[in-house]
Amino acid sequence: MHAALALRFAAIVHALCRAVAARGARGALAAPVVILLWLRLNRASKRIDSLAARLDAAGGALPAPKPDRRRNRPARRSKTLPRRFAWLLRPIPEATAAASQLRHLMADPACAALLEAEPRFGRILRPLCRHLGIRPPASIAPREPPPAPRRPKPAPDPEFIPEIPTHAAPPAPRIRPRAQRPVRAPPRPA
Image 1 (cartoon, helix red, strand yellow):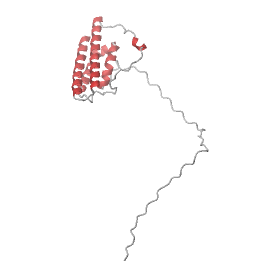
Image 2 (tube, one colour):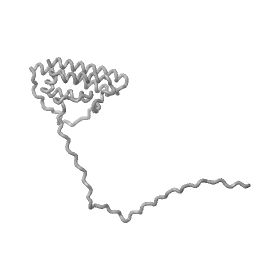
Image 3 (spheres, one colour):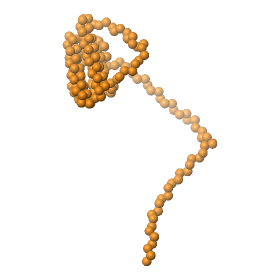
Image 4 (cartoon, helix red, strand yellow):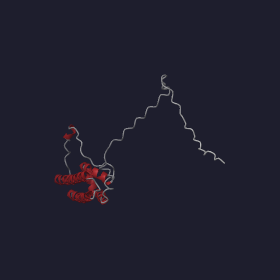
């Protein structure tokens, strides 16, 4: 059952990869972005396929993921794709079809139940949803804490009046240019 959903997702990603490669060859995207996007899409497809296979083999429930040991390592700067919402739709118009298919797949009751039960699928799909301009369902939407309230700027002290140094020179006078009078031609002798 989960393998069928993974195959549908792989078909969507494969069509999107073909469109990215075709538009990238025409210069719609820079070559490094095309390569990075291609790699990320294929990796997402493989991760979905692997997770679905493990879920089918386990009979519907996976053990909790192991703690991530990479958190103790210093963060290295990785190459990133643009983070704007729906950034992929402008350079690759064919991505709208992939977005529609992915939206339809996530609306499928079997897929919705899978996304609700297994949060790892949400971590894989969330970036793709952002790239394609899809608002993720509530089951995979990021659970971010509300933003901290901004500190108000301190009001100036009403009793504080800045001192003007006595040794400061007075401001230079403003000189206005004189209006020029029209030049008259000398009178002609008669």
